[in-house]
Image (tube, rainbow, N blue to C red; front, top):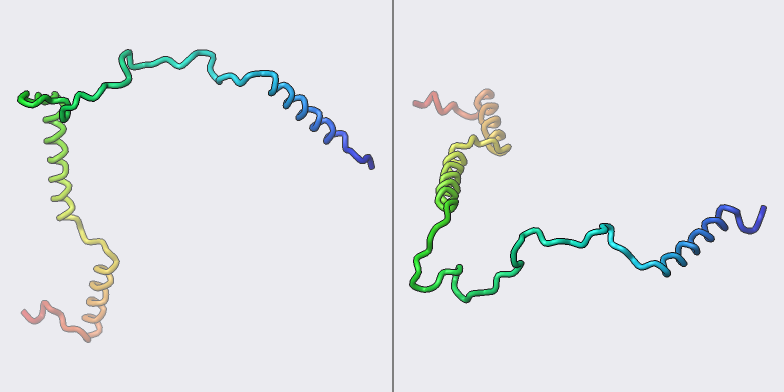
Amino acid sequence: MPIVRPNTAVRATRALQQQQTKKSTATRSFSATTRASSSHGPQYDPPTGWLFGVKPGEKYQKEGWEGPFFYGFCGSLFLAAIAYGFKPDTSIQTWALEEARRRLEAEGILEDPQKKQ
């Protein structure tokens, strides 16, 4: 059995060659083009010092999307609250309580509340 296996020697030689080529070449980006800005305008709006950009004494003018967004958002919250109120109770505790009451009534241990009236 040879002291150094041929596969190991080949791998070591390739690793050394790759290290030498990495030192001589500069790292390049994955893309050949430079990154371009896509907004076609300045990237930074300097602060004006006014709250929400509205100067004192000027009236704020709503944008077209603000009204439908406000009414749609509040309306959907209102409908969700109503739907949550009418949601059926599907908890395991409620089911277990009703099942225990039915079994106790069937065995005669607990009186049927319908018979009292």
